[in-house]
Amino acid sequence: MTIVFWLLGAYLIGGIPFGFLIGKMRGVDVRTVGSKNVGATNVFRTVGKKWGLLAFFCDVMKGFLPTLVAAQFSANSQQLTANSLALCVGITCVVGHMLTPYMKFKGGKGVATAFGMLIALLPATVGIAFVIFAITFACSNYISLGSCIAATSLVVMVWIPFCDHAGYRDLPLCVLVTLIAVFVVWKHRSNIGRLLHGNENKIYLFKKVKG
Image 1 (cartoon, rainbow, N blue to C red):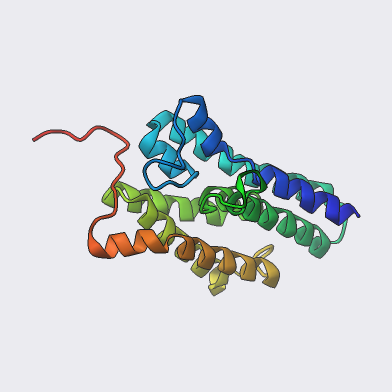
Image 2 (cartoon, rainbow, N blue to C red; image 1 turned 120 degrees about the vertical axis):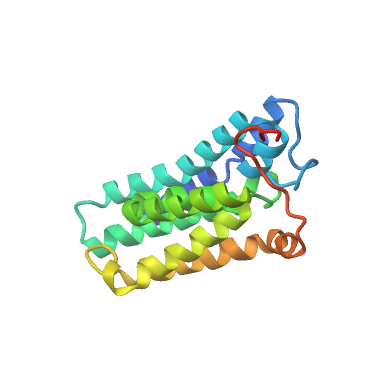
């Protein structure tokens, strides 16, 4: 029953559609504009930069906080047990975001929530992946491209030998990271199609300088 309580709570928290709620606060239904996605990227594009950043922060936190609390709650247990609970809670938050019960099981792509979950589990590795995302985004102005490359790089970093030390040798964690990355890329399949055809929307953090 304890596990059921944790997973139900994680699913309900992960399912909170912050992007949709923030859009509604600003008089915009993000399901009907832009990419029609309730994630932070569409909020950024259709509602405004600061509101998109707020949606991103909220989506990250709903993955980070439940996972961190679960890990702390199990701190006195065996390491495998603690990791297992945190992993289960984290992945349930991501599933909640992508299949939110509040919107007929239609949600976002899960990148920000997965990012928050992984910060709680692998802070150093996720920090490197975020730098890769930031560089890719800064060079291309494509959030989708940055997300897919960062997800792929994260898989490489958790499996390669020099990352094989305390906490990283947990096979379930490595498998989970791989599955999340595959799912993130799969959720971006329409974006990848637009990238290949050269019609993916660019996002600029700053105003373009007219030359």
